[in-house]
Length: 397
Image (cartoon, rainbow, N blue to C red; front, side, top):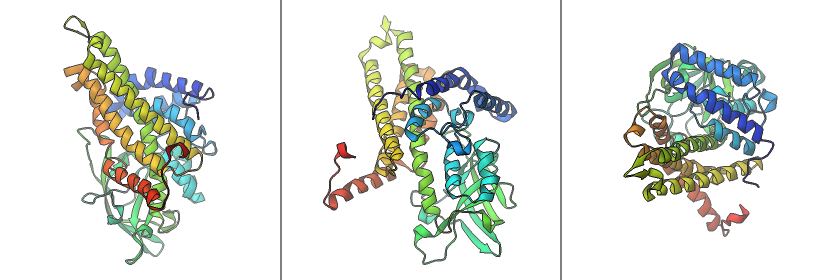
């Protein structure tokens, strides 16, 4: 594989980069403010993207997307990731949910949810984690769904259901099978419209002071038709893993864009500021920040490309995804931290995007599984190869 941006992708990537830097990033103060003006601004950006042929580039063509292969999408998604609003503006926020529905939804479910989802006519949300439960072990989840006649009755409480307050529906992971069933075959996915009686948003849980519509939701005798079951009954774990695997690498792609933006700000600042008679760029400790950041960004980028390459080949790439999820989240945190250090006191204020980016970066080490879980499961997979008499020869992987 080549590490250069393919010639076929370069025009799309350049167009997305221009859209991000010229239109999305300048609109961030309004988009972050929330409210009606933010919604109107986002809708206007989405109209522009659609008119310029940049809409939903990672979605399959048969769904109305751009149909980019996974590896090609890395080059675009890392540019789109420069802003937290990139995926919303360019119609790729729904990619995980769209791929999940594309594979498992029935025809009525596709008509009701999938088609409007890809066009951003509705928003999705996904409910798995629960308060008071260590979600790194999802077999402990307590939300239940009981089949009563032709309806599923859902009882429980979920949180960190992102964008639930703006979503048309939530895909809910529930325990549906009786005691004694294997814990990995005890859960199912059920589609729940957010206007269903008993579906109650308790609060929007701020994350490090940021309001990101990470909602806690009570399911109080929520009743939905039995046909709202997504995929086979008892296959919730399988569906969740298929959704979360690509989702983790999507995060890593966007982390690269955030890191690039922080790196650009840091390097520009080093030339703009002087101390003790010379630019900060002349100071060796500041040069160390540049060197370390370059090394970590490029390492994470190559790991991400490799994982995407494996996925394009039909591999689940579990080791590669586990490694990059940890490495990229750490990298992003470190690069933004150094950029803040270079800016000094100003880096702690809203005068730059760094303070906002820093808080999102720290959360990235927990979302979609804490670092510790990925470290453990990845190491176990590698060690299993040696236990069974093989090795992990990197050149052949």
